Image 1 (cartoon, rainbow, N blue to C red):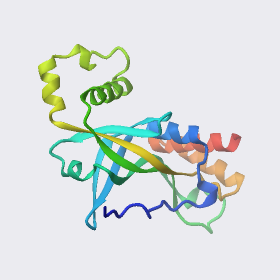
Image 2: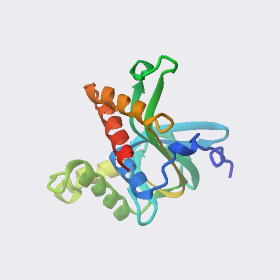
Image 3: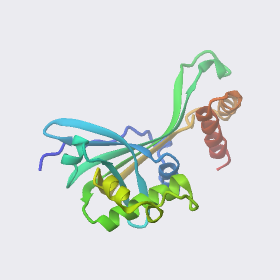
Image 4: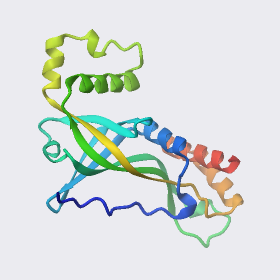
Length: 212
């Protein structure tokens, strides 16, 4: 079967690589709206969907619209799921010197795996309830058991469940590790002043990294 994904990898300088699986799992959980990329016959296609991780089975699961053409080429295919974490512009004006350039700090996880379609309706329903639990909470009235069965059947008929067996994970946290402690603190101070949530999150990650 032709595929164009197995040799892909994310550029990750060693100081930025994340190897702690618990941290990787947390990034995926906190940033679960992923970009799902698959390839066929020399082309790439991508869909933006929520994907949840089952860490014990090393599986991602989710669903796409039945009308989405990507669903026709996912079964038994290599895929790449990209989870983009917080990110922020870093201005050289924040440094103690003018001999520097702008950059960007960010967190990102690339998950590679083999996709399969979920043909068992009970398994699909369970995955939908897991999504509701994550995004709505345990007291949500939208769990499938609480809803009209005809309505649910119509909804299920319009989606394709997918399961991805993970084969490789690459994770990056670029947090100014290649700069001095003084410069890191200056960057953190500037990021914390901003109203942007991404900037504040990067500052938090940088501060935790200082204390690690």
